[in-house]
Amino acid sequence: MLEKEKFNGKVLIFPLLEIELLKNNFNLKKADVLVFTSVYALEKITIELKNFEKPVFAVGQRCNELLKEIGVTNSFIFSNVEQLFIRLKNHCSNKKPLIYYLRGSEISYDLTAELLKHNIFCEEYVVYKQKRAFQKEKLDKILGRKNLKGIALFSEKSVDSLLKSSAGQNLEKTFFCFSKKIENRLKSALDGNVSCKTIQEPIISDMVNMIIKEYS
Image (cartoon, rainbow, N blue to C red):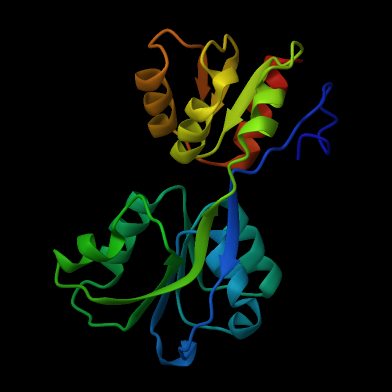
């Protein structure tokens, strides 16, 4: 996206996770509501979702774009899982819908447990697995570059990988954080005075605009 916006700089992408899709056996037609908190889970069943008319609750700009591309019109998009939970809870009030929650093997917010507190049940299906793709030597080389000005972090796991790098111990860079949780994790692990710029809502286009503005 930075390249599309004609960003006046060079961007290096270093993935810290690999996504492994898993085999599943479920019938989406039985569900009254579908829930996705990750675009990877959504990508797993794009074919089955064509002509799907029941409500779809999802998180993030990428999910929104993919749902539109597929042709799903009865969708509700939220900036984070907490917002989705509130709206889903209200949607299920005085109802007992069959909810399918399709997710990854690792989650930061236990949506199923929160719904259960309000007597709302959902069936969870783990449709992909996150695998660590940490390559210390390659990351050391990237972080050790003299012309490296900023680092964009999209998850708390990225902070953990950063800490494992020997080149990441004395970084005096600008960190662009996708959420306040990432910023807090970074500051608690490195230095409370570390330079952080954080977007208010986890929206990729906002992240891009923030970086462009910083180096315009």
